[in-house]
Image (cartoon, rainbow, N blue to C red):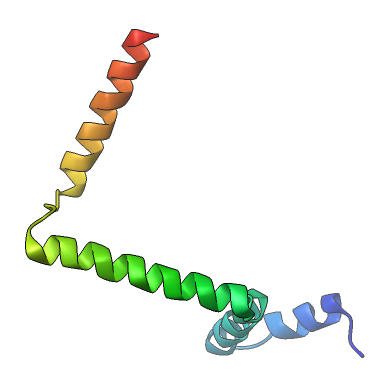
Length: 83
């Protein structure tokens, strides 16, 4: 059986497309596929659906990245001044 170092050496000789596929498969193998993972995915799907419905219904409004950054910077500055 080849060692991890030997496999890495061989993998680095592969064309970039094959290395990318191999890296992708290795990363997927690190993700848990147990019941907890399925529960977490289900909960995230529910949360994403809830948030999307809030936007669609007009309950919440989207802001631009620039506006969000500006608001966060202003809030941080306010907190720093109060210390």
